[in-house]
Image (cartoon, rainbow, N blue to C red; front, top):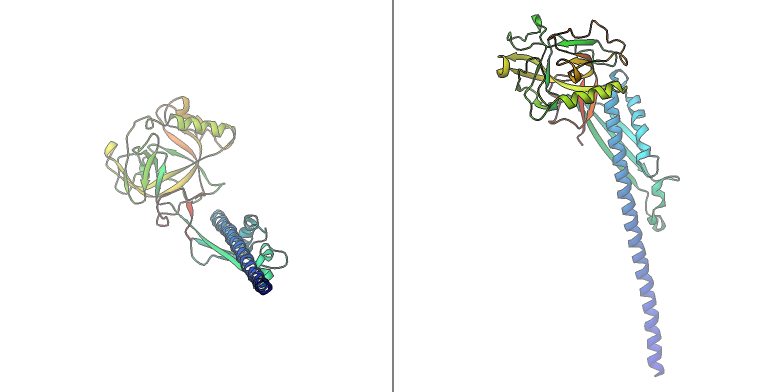
Length: 338
């Protein structure tokens, strides 16, 4: 019995050694699992920082192209990067502006004395430091199609080249006549014309298409009453109404059989309009825009017009199509493409 007892003692000792080894393995595996999870979480935050930085730089470069330098782009990206990472000290490694119409931002977090990744469990095993990184590319290009207010505007008689917050205030009339007719000598309105609707007060258009126009006479298409009321509410409250209109360079036929050849899209800051007589179909704002003079106002009777400024405008992934092939009329759609 004493011999059996001695064997049992040796077995208990071997089991203790094995248990200690297994505990080290399990603790190490758990530590690595936690570390890998932290790395993936940090990379997700870095991707958010890269995405936000690329979109911000693209917007700023479109708004003020004269200031779109490498140094400024780096500062714009850094402004949004730190807050999108757990440690708050995301590195913006580079901003690449070498491809026309694109911005690429690269971010990283490297372990060090004061950063998030220094608190890895694996450091107890003398594991090397870890660098986590991400990158994002944003494109800025003219839209190629989308849905909008059902009004198309000619490129012949109006200044679309000065799109900015201080651009020329213009009155765009229904039938300006003269040189505002397209190169084909169209008989339908050369200044602007209503488009067939796909839903109430909405027309779907695309670049290069010959979208059909309607001929509602002295009134806009049905269904626009609520939209115009919202415009009035926004403007009288001190806000701004920005509408992206499809722009045509040619028009053919007349009346309901007329069509407009779409070359691009331009955003208009609306000051006032006269699409009909009285109520929401006729609005002239003078309180918030003192430049709304009598010379800009539509004449009485059957005169029809819209008044405002063509402005630069950026949207974030709001238009259909890849973009980039239309006329650059001051409106771009910014998308994350990588």
